[in-house]
Image (tube, rainbow, N blue to C red; front, side):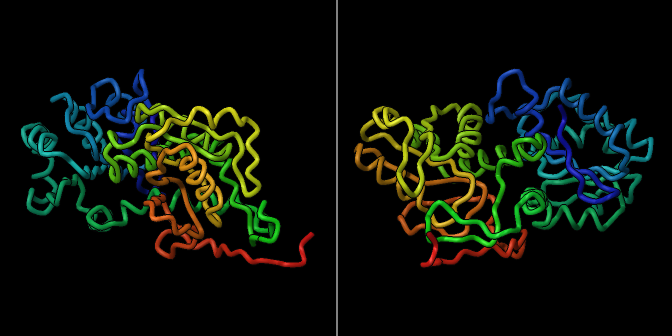
Length: 324
């Protein structure tokens, strides 16, 4: 399946590396080669989208077949407008030697179409400027946040911490039935891990909830790391499978994969359990958070639950002493 995402009614976004990773025979986040087979499938996908402006993101693609760009010639002649972003030096050199370079000249000259790590086959300044800024980086974050907000329950919810009430329930499970959102959540989590950590410094991934397990198992496969799943680790420290603690290895380094951090209780408990086994929690990576626990570890997220630049959920909690 080729994944693409709507920027607006006229423009579609296609992340090449994500499609390489999830359309390969073996799931491997470190694949960085675009082969003709996948490129041809992207070509067929573009023809079904029905939009004339296509942003093609080559981030994390460092090698490709020299014939790759030839497939876009027919589309350009048919009236499609392309903007290639995050091109590696190799991609740029192949593109500049390719027949597509002639189409750049037709669109007003290479000086007007060439920008940092990108090349456009359109004179539409709106989309060119969009790709030059951080908007393209925030686009997918906003897409994920909007989807979660739409599927959240806006009624007050009592959390497992008996005295804490939230003004809404963030239904992370809803992403698991939306494949295009699910794969991008997984993809960004992998990207955050790769950016923040040397993979040699992580021995295992762990999760502390069912939702976290749904994330960590696929992230572990993509990044080739073993995963330890606490079946249920919450404010009451209820571990249905207590034997799992015996799987923790002394002196090894663990990274927590989480879905949503509200008060940070699960992170604190995970750190405590690891320390009891003389193991180490090196950090946590997940979708979103409300309060970050002060544990002197790095906590990464796709977006903050009340981020004005991405999506402000208006999420809040309060302590009620009269709850039974």
